Image (cartoon, rainbow, N blue to C red; front, top):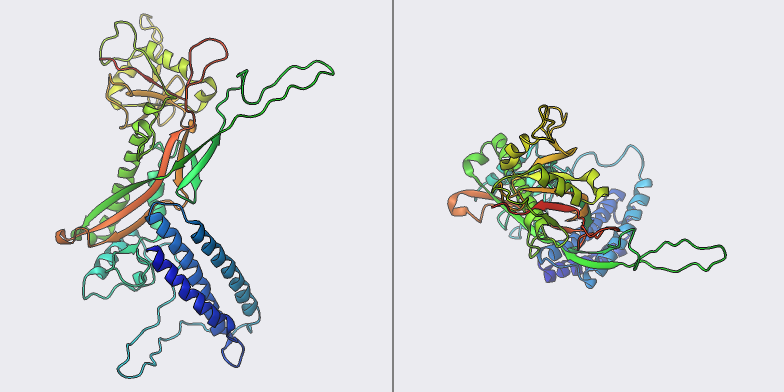
Length: 470
């Protein structure tokens, strides 16, 4: 919805506010139930108008303007006043009375005039009255065919462009419960989004303060001193940096055939599998090797990661125990407790043959396979989980194995989660209905450089990988 349309709607709300605000909702001009209904409708209109401004900013990929923020705040204040009016009037209603059923539509139009039918009450069920995602999708397809009567459950849900009761203008919003279920699968344990440090925002950007000084740093930042008795306390102050990060937009289009739409159960499993899997894979790849331009900055492109050199005369496409030891020593010790090994499955044979002393008669394995001695769904290396990840490089390339503490990686997310809607128009000539998923997020390391230790010159990091072995 464009902003000028939104503001026009708000102007109409203001005009109606004067009329409703000045009406006498007493027993002479209007019964108590009707007065409460009018107040509730006006309150909902204010809420919808504010939401339209937020949606318009999201569509334009920009922050909400100061003018729109003022309008939203004014609407919220007015809605709060109306809520108090509603509660006061409900408290005075006689108990045991009141309407028990929805009113029948009344048509008082004169002959020749445009006929209108009052809208039904909006369905607040998070599933929109549908039993599952497949049933919703089938209803969308059926209701979008010219000449068909749309499902009443769709009529009571807002369409993608704010109109009610029609899918012809672009499509229908997917009920929020189904969108949340998609989000749960995107954030599954196998993905990196769930493991990263989550930061949520209601706008399209976030300013993050950070202090990258170390506890042993002798200059800059907060300092601690041993002071003699009666000596003046040496002063110090914190050093904070701020960085503003904008959310980027990840979109997925899932075309679905008419044949599949006719099978609600098959439709359910298809949508639940395809959209989350595709989005999770894209996020994993960005968090590992993203460029930071129009997408998250991945750990392998971050200045704060460390790449350990291969051993002298080490053959191509191999991983030695010495490589593992050196990677482990470069991970900052306090972060090891949360660290995981990300690997490409191609390197598993290299790990399974590793031993602490290959020349010993009784070899002690370094790598513990999943479900065995590790007693874990993940294999174990140096006591930390080994998580296979398609985003990692193949054996021998830089990034085929990464030791990382994902809590040192920020995942910025839009608080509203995934926005989901659907339309038949994109692939109309192919008889396909398209589901669109929009997720606003960003990702970047919490550290802009490696850590210099208090003693020695060997740097430490939150993310350590191995140089190419070609």
